[in-house]
Amino acid sequence: MRIALGIYRLQPRGGLEDNCIRIAEELARRGHEPTVVLAGPHADLPFPIKTVSLAPGAFSSHARLGAFSRAFSQATRERFERTVAFQLMPDADILFIADALRDNPGAPLVKRLTPRFQAFARLERACFGPDAKIRIIGQALPQMKAFVDRYPASRERIAVIPPAIAAARHRPELRERLRARTRKALGLNELAQTWLWLGLQPEIKGLDRVIETLPEHPETSLLIGGLTATDPKMRKHLARARQLGVDGRIHCLGYVSGDKFFEVLAAADALAHPARTEIAGAVIIEALANGLPVVTTDICGFAEHVEKSGAGRVVHGPFDRSSFSRYLGEVCGAANASLSKLGIAYGADPKLYSGIGAACDLIEAESWSPRCDV
Image (cartoon, rainbow, N blue to C red):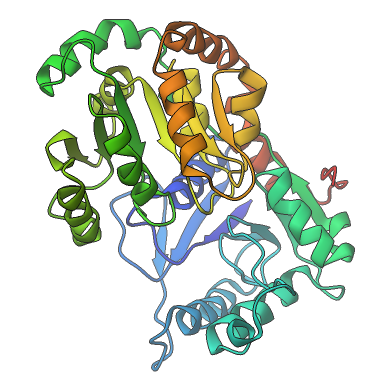
């Protein structure tokens, strides 16, 4: 089949962008002809790329998304046998949704009246409302339960896939091999506790919460993966670290990929992931499966895997920093080695790595039965 995949941009490559690329690669492997349609920059990729131009005047993020939705529809009309959107684009055949519910009736009135809220709400209703026909692939049950509660008629068009962890990111045997060498290279004390924070969005992923907790653990170091010390996003966080007197214990590592990814996982004693918003959180499963215990928040769709594995702790309800701090102390303490083994055992389940294949099965299908137990 000729299949168009619509995503606004592929750089920087976060979780949604990674899923789009991996789905295109798997579809090509299966003999299909995927084309990625986008409006932003991209690197060279082993499948066709079509860049569309947006209508003039699309300056805000919601205006750009609306313009891209229209451009995608025009660029793909009658040229493809299947169209897959990775943002809210109601004219597509299938929506791979990575967003949380936006048209929340409980949102403050002042927020609901903003042009941004209303624009996203219109697109969301066009995809999930009773008159919509677009089929929807969700990534986590908590995410899709919110949509079904808001748009009950959408239940019959929703399927939730298993986690889409890349098998190449599962190398638990490297932990013991890389740990001492990496800690030495980073100048970490052999026995000192070390936390790892990974992400590209400091506020959303709760980096400030981690830094605020660091003074309570005076012998602990913090590795920050995804951002450099000179990144503008880090400016206020490093300034706060200096105020707290912990900046000397923070190491900004920049983007971590390939061997570097496994090195930083091996060097750390816990993944500190107190996110404020996280639809799924692939990094949670990646850490667990590679033997790194996790402390996270229950807002994360994949927090359930921390509890199922027993290889970490979950902060439930409104964020409580004292609980977060206590949990980090627990998982980095005497139980660390046993928690690491629990995570590695849990990571042996092949279902954790099957999400991309499941998504491609759904894209290939002419129709599907709902797979959303919410």
